[in-house]
Amino acid sequence: MKEEFVTKWQSQVKKGTLSFIVLNAISAKELYGYELIEIIKASTAIEIAEGTLYPLMNRLTKEGLTTSKWVEQESGIPRKYYILTSDGVATLKEMRKYWHQLETSIKTITTNEI
Image (tube, rainbow, N blue to C red):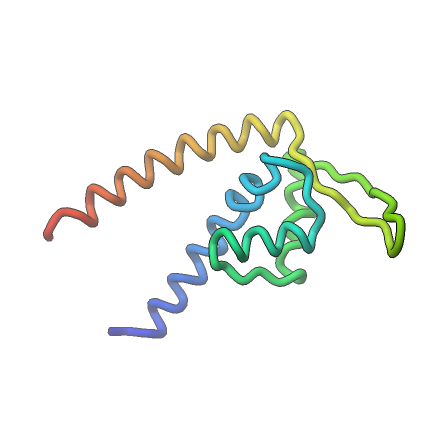
């Protein structure tokens, strides 16, 4: 087995699906950065660093898929909460549709003996 190949492949799969994962996570409710990291880690077993998340959130905001708002806290610093925009909701709907088609195709090919 080529461990190096598998490791690179796993990294590419993670990078390729991270936007999809993040959009799904914030579709349920507004989340702030650290909370988003913890939910992704608990739900997917994917380790995501702040240095990965915040540039991604900036890109999603520039694309018009998310927006954010600062919320003051009773104690401590304000938190930046992320929210899907209407374009984000529509985009996520299309992404989910494609994901399900892809998942079905992958299941078909991986369950057949080649």
